[in-house]
Amino acid sequence: MTVVGPFGLSVRDQALEADVQAGLAAVEEGLLEATKSEVPFITEAAQHLVKAGGKRFRPLLVMLAAQFGDPYAPGVVPAAVVVELTHLATLYHDDVMDEAAVRRGVASANTRWGNSVAVLTGDFLFARASQILADLGPEAVRVQALAFERLVTGQILETAGPQDGRDPVDHYLDVLGGKTGSLVAVSCRFGAMMSGADETVVDVLTQYGERLGVAFQLADDVLDIASDSHESGKTPGTDLREGIATLPVLRLRERAQRLGLSEDIALCELLDSDLSDDARHAEALAALREHPALEQARRDTVRYAEEARAALAPLPECDAKAALLQLCDAVVHRAG
Image 1 (tube, rainbow, N blue to C red):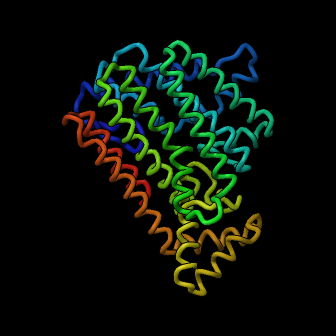
Image 2: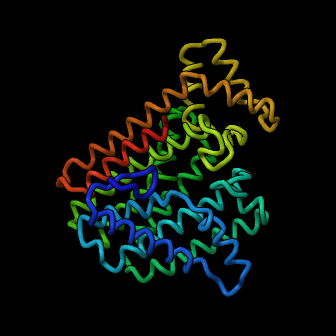
């Protein structure tokens, strides 16, 4: 069993391991090439997060999904570059919106160069992704455009909040389906599409990616509360400080409303206060780490990971399917 890709994913088959490793290496080269500009400063800013590393979760899914067709088809690696460039672009924009200081263990682009440069660098990455996408054909352009629409819609819905009478947890899970599930689903779809896999296989892998993407983000929500910056590569409790209610907070509020316990209500009030104060922020983070709402969020993560696992049932047994199943376990393990 060899370690490959994010979360220490183990691949049993040497041929599959070689394909995935070669594919990810080619994606890395493609990312560096796609982020070059005639203007050295743009190259530096565009490669800032590329060189910081990252899990390359989406390219890995492209490579594994391509195993259900021809993994050496010419569109597979460019498609993986497209999804990772799109993901990286959203990170530049997210850090501006969240006023995040750290990303992937390094200073965020907005901290280093300011908000304007960070936003424009994200736009530059979107432009480069579009150039590559144009060579993959009109169907690929359409798939990416629809996913990007969902991604942006999810971000807008998160900013706007739930409508009156809408369950906040249901609203939030819809947000995650757009913000994260859409691009993870496209990663699986592109891998299968570009490899020439059967349409039913493409659909199965797309459904898997949608559910895995939500589980992946829910695990991130748990990590944002439960981990330190060394584990997660970014500042813990960033969403808390910005007043963004992720699933652990929503589960807390749900419990406070249902049970009316004074300690739950007090914690809700603390979370609703000004958490720009470091001491208050640390108090809120410590309290939420000990609260049952965090465990409920972990259970929600497990549920979506199990739905992803179940979605793969129609696929034939093979090493690529085993690796996709193992990713479900890895996401759950990541959430503790």
